[in-house]
Length: 90
Image (cartoon, rainbow, N blue to C red; front, side):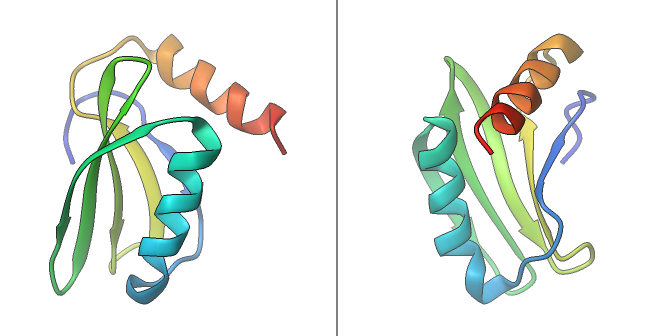
């Protein structure tokens, strides 16, 4: 993805097979809304909405991680706040 904004690594280790369950748990945990899914052989990308902003939550086999990245250019402070909210919920 290439929004130009910061992204959040939600989960450092994941797999293609576990992405569906893992992503669903992250979506629920951060209080986002699932908009659509795109699943291919080597990448899974779902579009979600969080605080009115569209994001990609994705897995790709190169990094084997799950990331959250805004689809639009947003201030870094938005991503930093999401990170702080996630850390506070642990």
